[in-house]
Image 1 (cartoon, rainbow, N blue to C red):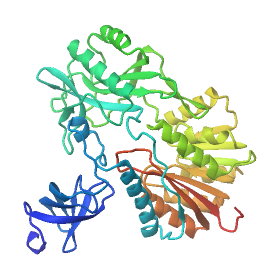
Image 2: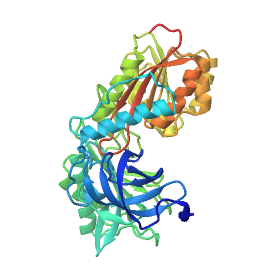
Image 3: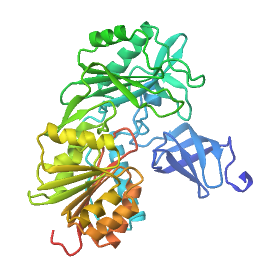
Length: 460
């Protein structure tokens, strides 16, 4: 195989980088053969080592940069920078925003065949660091002490790290304190290979607007050694803590949380606000990890929905009701649907918490429930979708086209599946009017996009 390729494994070659992949690696080509190199930037000339080849592409390692991109920034040394999940931290924030905006434009054209659609400049953050309000950190042991941090790429080796550069400082402080307390009390870490030991993960959640902190101790065993001392020390060292929760996961699995959750101290939930809407967040709740940019995203959803108080809105993939409750402030009625029963319970609780009575929630698959609602006469004026990375189910897209809501607001975390779905909606009678990228996850390659569509022939 390798004889016909222009490069061999372990070759050292000079290249010029042309582009970035969707996961932030630099792309260089040798006689048309692409080589992907992490930490490289477009426009840079460099020496690389080819470390892996296959029929269609190679992987390289950056050895020396001859000409730097003007978007390159120096990264401080340390494990937080090496393994913190920040694939684009070596790129200036201005460069990151440009890359993400271009990525959205390119996939809309390439996959969606949407050449003339209006793409607004991406909405970034004033401070693109320390924004995440949740951490789930694996725990291990080294030299008789507990360690907690990140997994090295493509391995199960834990790198002990005292801080993550994208976590809110209170989250970093909480994880560090719990790690130290457990180490002092001699609580043994879980050993994945032997399936022995106790402490698997430390989770922390923080309400940015309320200052409330939750600590979740995830163990293999039903009991925690020195449980009372552990709780007492957490309360003493973390004055913002409002909830200490124990989750038991006895299985051999990569899934972090188990099925049994009990409150060791304080409340079952902490609270936070997005705009004026208050949310109760439990250990298991799905809640957006960047609350500041979530507000930006939801304000845009409200703007695109253009509600006057007379509309019926359907929110497919409604989760714990975050977008639904935002829209309910301006809509006549909101129906939310979600396949996860616990999320729907959270959504109902959050509606009650805010005194919102014009929102109704149902458990089920959107592609099954929405056609049923339609048959019952619950026709949407506006339909909102915020699907997982795989995009909308084909049956749901068909249901939207059949129901013909005047407007569709599509929120996406994957520009590629978004573009595919927009093409289907366009072919089914919709016009894509506006596209707004939002940078929800600075320093990473992820980009969120919100799109406004209207039924063709409707005056907008």
